[in-house]
Image (cartoon, rainbow, N blue to C red; front, side, top):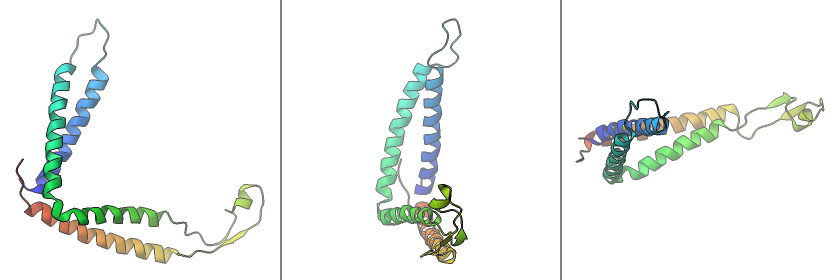
Amino acid sequence: MNLAKALKTKSRLANKIATLQNDIQKHNSIPTEQERKINVAEMMVELDAAVQDMIKLKLTIFIASTPMRETILKLAETKSRIAFLRGIDIHEGKGKESDNYRFGSNDETVYTVEFDIVHVRTEVAKAEALIDKMQDELDTFNHNTDIEI
């Protein structure tokens, strides 16, 4: 199986684990007179096995992806940078959004920015292009790297 397929398998296994956990939590306690439709003890055994499978799968993926580790980390940090950039206040010009206004003053405040909307959007676009490039490299690696499960 290639690494891309292993990542999809990991996602499906994570969903299975979440479903089992949810079902066990919700169906463990039932009224005494009610018939138990779900065997939570069997589900717990299935959950434990699925968690062990997940550990093995994650370890295999981790080892196989070692050559791309730097790219994976850069990808995550670049995504964080985009979130940061999008959070920069780019409000400029006259406004009543100042602390004075919040405390009852009607004084207008003139805002200036170090990084204007054009700069921020340009930086976001550069980061998105870098993400696309790294993701393409990662996708190619994942499709071309075979692993044994």
